[in-house]
Image 1 (tube, rainbow, N blue to C red):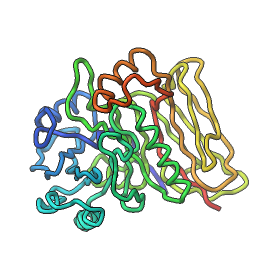
Image 2: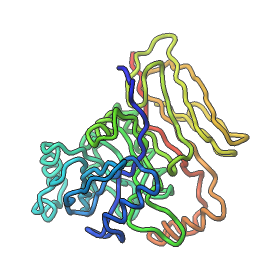
Image 3: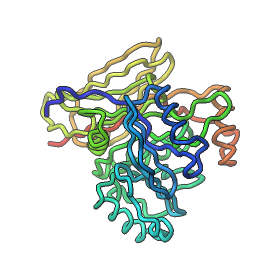
Image 4: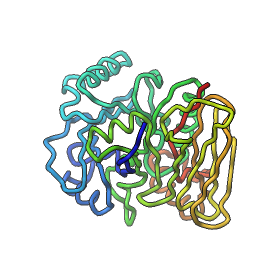
Length: 331
C-alpha cells in the first residue's frame, strides 16, 4: 500500500470532563489540548454520551464514552450517541457487555479494552482479546500495572491475536505542577486528521505510544510495511527499528514470539536505529524502559500508590517510557 500523504498525528484517547468525574469543562480541556499541541482528542466520560462538539481549528475532537462497570471499563469511540442510557444502567454481566458492545459496533463505534490489569478497576469479565478492536496497553503515568498489561498483550500476540494498542492518559485533572493530559500520548500514522482516518489507522495498528508529546518515539518498518501490517517472510526479510530521542541510560528492548530478542542501552542521548534479520513467523514490537529514580518513585507513591496501597513503597522495576505497536510476519 502507498502511504503518500500520510503522517504521524498525536493525540489523547482517554479523557474525562465535568460531564462525569473530570475536573475541567470541555472548553478547558480543549484549551489544554491546544496548548499541548495535540492533533486529536477523544472525550470518554464515564457512562454518558458526549454533547455536540464545537469546531476547533487544528484539533480534531472525537466522540466517545467509557462504559465503566464493575466487570470492566471499555472505551467506545467515533459515535456521538454510542450507548443508550438503559444499557449504561443495566450492563452488569459479560453477556450484557457483549450485547452493548455489539450494538455500539453496529452504530460504527471502535471499542477499546481499558486498563485490564489495573489493581483498582481491572477487567473482571472474561478477558477475550477478540471481543474488542483495540487494547489500552498503557494507562496513566507509566506504572507497575502497565508492565503486567504489556505481558498479557504479548501473550495475545503469541496466540495469534493481532491486537492494536494505544496509550491513554485517562485524564481527570492535574496534580500540583504535573501536566497529566498528555501522559502518555498515542501517535497515529494516518491519511488525515479526520476522526474517520484516525480511528481507521488505530484499528489497523498504525500506532506508537510516547511518554509525552515530542519525547522518545519508536517506529518500526520492514521494507514498505509499517506497524500493524503483515510481512511475507523471505530469506532476506529484515526489520528496522528507529528511535527518536533515545535518552542516555535508557534501554531499548525488542520482542518477538519467543521473548526479548534484542536489547540496547544508550550511552548518550540521540537518535538510534538498528536493522535486524527476521527468520521466523510471529510478531515484533519494542519498548524503551528507564530505571525509576527517587523523584519518580515518590511521584509514583503520590499519584498511583495512594489509590493502590499495596504498591506504596515497592521497589519499582524498569518502567516503560515509549512503546510501539506490533508488526507481523507470516510465511
